[in-house]
Image (cartoon, rainbow, N blue to C red; front, side, top):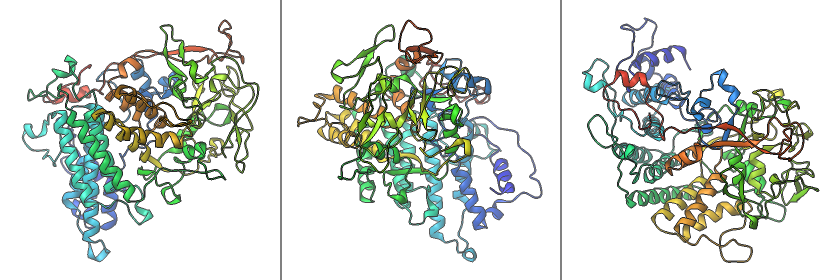
Length: 634
């Protein structure tokens, strides 16, 4: 971006809404661009809006900022010495003065103010062929971004001010010292802003240069997510006194402790509207097929994250124009292959993937942390396989042939925990002893081995993340093939609609939507037919089925899991716990519980502590603004 414009933005945004006033210069340098100079030029106007866009979340940069706060990603605790603050959050060493890398509370208000300035000042320029139609589209985009950034603030903080205008930094204190509104007031305001923006935006653009720009479908996707969150137990009928008695500076209760079924009904309507709009505009689940026309679940699930919209991936509803995917691949690749090998997935996630027969392998845990195994699933925890396991797939990452329709997915000698699992498991998890095609060898996570410790650049719990890692990436040679940075895709819409429908009342339609996801994953569907699994018989059973399907299908995506366990009000039970993995200090391929050098033994690698369902308002801001109230738990 033009340096002068950037400097002007910083100066013009001298006020941080949530604080009182920040220091700013009384006089701009003589060489600074004025608003008239910026918005009198098409290129500078476009650059201004591009700067407003740059806080749209990057799904490849959230792993050590938000996602590892949940129970999907594992970031090596050794990274704490390098300033990765999320480790402190995991262990409860966190307070309102702690530094959180996204810093949404302070940064997003700046972007919101910049968007308001854009709406107020952008204008057509006939000499530069900058039309009124294009300007109006761009103003609607700015309106979407204002709503989207408010959504992000509400998503993480729960009690926020509404920044609906440009505040005069020289105005009276009551205008500068902005206080928080109630949660429902924020939801309704954001909801209406998204509806209004959607009316002015197209569902998609013909020009490839506008990829990632706001559309009406993006507006409705965020709107539906917003209303799903607002209908969920954390903020709909939560009678925990800590929340029921929490008030803002006006004495208004921020969270409504009375359950309202109408909130779920609004979520249903929002998702039904979104789904219809998406389908009417050609969106559909992404599939790849075998030679006989049957679905290839491995390639379908893997490549939904790698194929571009223009290459037939119509599942994408909202994507960021650019992302830092090469860094993500660097930190998730084994140390001996040119990566750092420090970002993995949790044992909880490993345990939750279905078996190939569609049944859950583990139903819970005993007091000592040992798994409660579902004997009907066929899951075997101990021992090692004696032969290769083949599936109908073109997935060739395990000594396979991409031109063949049948390939091995595990090799002889694989720990039985990882055998006979569903396709999404193999696409998502890199485990010890897994064949690594680029290197022509198995991964070696044992201590003192090429990919193992002792170092903070090795998997601390025995796993690395494989999902969203392109199979042809090569961090050693700085090869990172392009892929879309997906924030919302159609599979999420089906599962969210299923959840909302079931919360209104037990729904056969909800089961149909879940079955769409299971079909693509190559799993037996719920039903009473041959080869099907008995359908959940009531609302509670269906709720659990939907939640586990979300957990697997949407794992490691845009912090959705962290959202889910918070809005379901289950995060305290899940995150206030010992976190387990394989024995990263193990040097031997052994599963002997009595052998301290055995790698394939469950061991605690971290004790986590969960403090609050919301991020705290920065202490420096509550100190300066008497109208701000700190969130419960802090």
